[in-house]
Image (cartoon, rainbow, N blue to C red; front, top):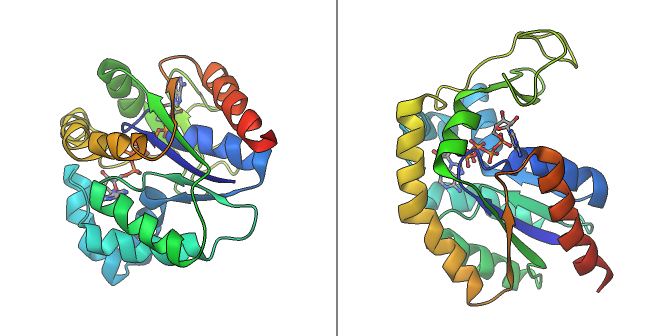
Length: 217
Ligand code: AP5
């Protein structure tokens, strides 16, 4: 199954992708995670992306498309779930071109719909493990021991772009540049809207409900 998971910053895309991967065995391709890895490794791409990410701006399309296209077209047979990509109409068009050349198509487009005040609360309370990438929340998804990762005991950190000021800019850019992607897909696909203001398990159940039906159709 090839899935595009859309949604505002902090809508819970990464959280739901982990569940989707576990249930459907697809590959999780998160443009944000790939960029953070590039930064941690100090690559040219990571250096170029840094100032955009830290201020809440989108990284230029040409850098992102090149980074994602190969990973997507080379994904193994079980498929993938795209998280954070495409984020502009140009990225969506380039994705379509790459898939067409590989004789592949998107099976499901899901849109996690969430209110801005919920986004702010979720993102400013997010903490993650710098070692394994596990994501927690200071209220909603607490680690077993305060401030340390359940899996490896590493001290949890806050992403540099998770401050209130940067989140507001990320939201502005989301409305200007990424909302049009939802309309782009509506012209070609049935876009499934999911109320993502609910708790993780409720959002997961709604997501599985849609994907189970599509998988058995
Ligand atoms: P990216 O990493 O993609 O960030 P994002 O889209 O802003 O999304 P987030 O990772 O912040 O949130 P999420 O929806 O995954 O939420 P999560 O599950 O973690 O991008 C970062 C930057 O990279 C961009 O700003 C840009 O600069 C650049 N970039 C990336 N892709 C790009 C592209 N394609 N083009 C150009 N630039 C690009 O959940 C958030 C928190 O809430 C967590 O603490 C979690 O525990 C909690 N939570 C999740 N779900 C629930 C729930 N249902 N109830 C309660 N709490 C919940």
